[in-house]
Image (cartoon, rainbow, N blue to C red; front, side):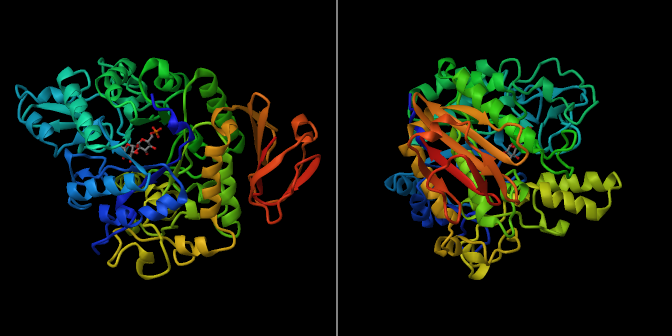
Amino acid sequence: MNTKFKQSVVYQIYPKSFQDSNGDGIGDIQGIISRLDYLAELGVDYLWLTPPYVSPQRDNGYDIADYYEIDPLYGTMADFDELLAQAHAKGLKIIMDLVVNHTSTEHEWFKQARTGKDNPYYDYYIWRDQPNNWQSKFGGTTWEYNQATNTYYLHLFDKTQADLNWENPKMRQDIYKMMRWWLTKGIDGFRLDVVNLLSKDQRFLDDTLASATADGRKFYTDGPRIHEFLHEMNREVLAQFPDALTTGEMSSTNLASCIRYTNPANEELDMVFNFHHLKVDYKDKAKWTKTPFDFAELKQLFTEWQVGMHEGGGWNALFWNNHDQPRALSRFGNDHEYRFESATMLATVLHGMQGTPYIYQGEEFATGNPDFTSIHQYRDVESLNAFEILRNANIPEAEVLDILAAKSRDNGRTPMTWDSGHANGFTSGKPWISAGRNADEVNAAADCAAAKSVFKYYQKLIQLRKEQAVIVDGDYQPLFAEHAQLFAYSRNLADEHLLVLANFYDTPMEIDLSAIEWLKGSQQVLISNAAKPLERLEGIISLQPYETYMVLG
Ligand SMILES: O=P(O)(O)OC[C@H]1O[C@H](O[C@H]2O[C@H](CO)[C@@H](O)[C@H](O)[C@H]2O)[C@H](O)[C@@H](O)[C@@H]1O
């Protein structure tokens, strides 16, 4: 088995917003090729591409209509082959995002399935005579009526994203065949979208709608046959490609399941994303609310997952940002006067942990939320639905826009700002979605030229993971767990120690480190964002706003 991913760092590309090469305002594969040197210079190992397959783009590619073709929006299969070859030549591996929980209703399988109950593809999807009360993750019921069959099909997401029936072994074999086809082409792995939702409780019982999470998810999250399906996928596909990397996106999951998914003995997946740490600013577990983040809960969740996965032999995919999330810098840091300090502090906290870090495009030069002020600036289906639902509940428009500005997935989907030229170097045309405020100041060129460069800081963090075994293999011990302002932990591997200290807020603070015995011996500051970093950390030290240190001893 390939365990190199343990020292690796993955960079996520949202092709639509990365780099346009033909002036249509939409990023494309040739655009990605033109930026490979930038990515190689950053030092990342893998590039994860969100779905570039043929799709009606109702959910930006997470609604796949043909698993075997590239959407003309992004180019051709020849462009993709060129990307693969050029990336490999520069030492970069490519991971494809793959959605096998559902397909677009424009997929040939669904087009066939909806014609009649006797069609061989009818059983590729999930049908019921009557809907139950499950709620779609994008709002409204999960069931859509189909006249030709007089039945309803299940869609956990948009009504154009029909859930596949994993109970059907023939359907599963078609999925495995397609996965082998991509791996044979030479890609280096998959990021599997909401893969813990594949197995549905076949009773399809009503949920009792008493809380924001009582929407049916308990009947299909980490469902009854999920480990069986993932083990089968591993044996039918992944075992034949031992160097391939697999990351599972785990929606609303739990620790015990994730240990089971990623402990190599179970032969399922290499690593998993969970989202609990990104729900610490949800009020009563509801996303479309605005409330300050709970710092104590954030630290406690990281401790639970770091310690639990280490002890259980599992492996975490570590991340602050992705294409579904508002920018962590705006959420947990300060994207105004402490942009450099808070961006590097967040990076240090995450890159010191055990797991494989993921960097989302633009994070490496401190991109923040765009601060959209009108509904017309949004493009995301989930955000547009939420706007309608909240407005229908009589919440004033200004309040709804305020919530969207904090929580919309479009916060992470604005175009890359490469420089301060036309459309910030993203396109020669008009971008499909506008960049936010500050795009002329916050861009890759300006950051790389600055004395305090976030990009250069990330380069160093990525390098440290390759040099320091304690970052890869050490255990995790929370420090000063009760502290209201400090995020601190140590990593320990035999007699090697790593200390990560971070002032998580915008006011200075002091901390007494005397109780940490090993700091009294020889030590080395590996990285810090301090204007004048201390040479040793000992006794009482002060930390300026968002100041951070990583120390080896
Ligand atoms: O919030 P969770 O229940 O923990 O779920 C995690 C994310 O799941 C969904 O994301 C992915 O699937 C969607 C449908 O294919 C797609 O729209 C999205 O882009 C994928 O990343 C959900 O949409 C996200 O909001 C959740 O964060």
